[in-house]
Length: 229
Image 1 (cartoon, rainbow, N blue to C red):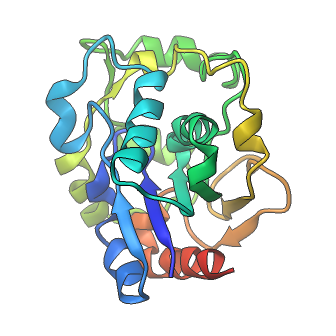
Image 2: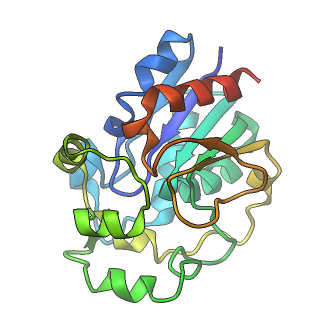
């Protein structure tokens, strides 16, 4: 079986994978959901100094300190950016990167710089104490298509989600990501998501943007299939 490391998107910690992790473990995989600096039980560690580089270091360090090898690194949404940078730092430990509705960083550019026009200005108007607030229902409904989140899902998410340190979006990616881009990569497009999916020839999942919450068994099955391959 495989060693699987799970990295969530903005606002999320290891807790977001609670519905996926037991399914993968039951299939025989060694599963490591991560909480990055400033999220979940590490929320108190977030500050203006928390950047995209911080999160990439979190991921690489977690893999190295645990002595993990042949890792299937699964990255959701924002998590695609620090996961790519981490993989470029420790490519010898990574077997494959799986991007789930994920953001792909561009060398030398910030996430704001690769966002659609107007996004940075709109987000910066909402920032409080150096964090981007957890999204309201109105923002989710207006921007995430057929997301599939029930009222219960939203309440569960908001009870644990933490504001995103804004400097994670303002920190440029390294100038060279070639070591990560040379690794085997699988892209997963969520059909409920609006816009073009990242990557070429993606696999598809009949879910909204947060399949670990809304379609955990289906997502786990897809990860299991990719990991076994």
